[in-house]
Image 1 (cartoon, helix red, strand yellow):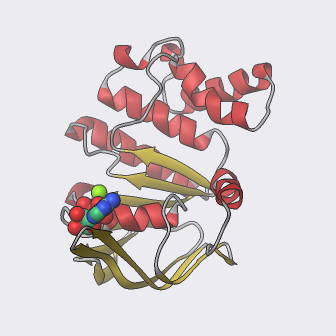
Image 2 (cartoon, protein in one colour; image 1 turned 90 degrees about the vertical axis):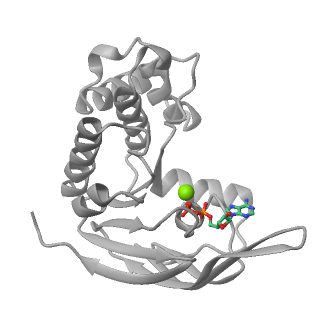
Length: 227
Ligand code: ADP
Ligand code: MG
C-alpha cells in the first residue's frame, strides 16, 4: 500500500534549516494498523502530510499503491487523494455553518454524486459512527467526541482504502479516545489500512504496529501483541 525509500524533507525559513524527515524508509502493508509515535517536533505531521500527498518532499521515493508520488500536478495529486485516502485531524475541521449530514455529504458533492445519493450515503456513515440522531446538528452543537465521529464519517463516506489521522484523539478525553480507537479498529477489521499519528501511548497500544520517530528518524518499529 505504502512504500517509502529514504524520504527526506527540510524546511528552510530565513537562515534556519530544519530536517523534518531524515531518510525515512518504511513499508505499510494493506490492512495494517500503524501508529506513528513521537514527541512534539519529531516529524509526525510532516510524515503524514507526505503520505497524504498534502505536502512534497525533497529526496527519496514514495510509492502509493505502486505509483511514485513524485512530480504530480495538483490535479493528479488531488486524484490520488480523492481516490485512496481519508483524512482525520485533531481539530476535526468541520465546516461550521453546515450540519453534520452536510459535512459528511460534501466529499460526495465534489465527486458529482446527486443530492439524494449523497444524503443517503452520509446518513449511513453517520449511523455507523453512532451519530445518525445528530444529522441535523451544527458542529457547535456537538461535543468533541461527537465532532470527531462526524469527521470520521466524512473521511469514510468516499470508501477510501487508506485512513490517515493526525492526533485524532488529541483534543478528546479518555472515554471519547477509547470510542474513536474502537471505530478505527472496526474499520481496520473491515480491511481499511489505518495510519495514525500520535504522542499518546494509549493510541499506540491500540495499533498493530508502532513506528517511533525521533528528530525526523525512525528509531523503533515493533508490533504489539494481538489483543
Ligand atoms: P510533529 O507533528 O511530530 O510535532 P512536525 O512534523 O510538525 O512535528 O514538525 C517537525 C519539525 O519541522 C519541527 O521542528 C517543526 O518546527 C518543523 N516544521 C514543521 N512545519 C514547518 C514549516 N511549515 N516551516 C518550517 N518548519 C516546520
Ligand atoms: Mg504534529
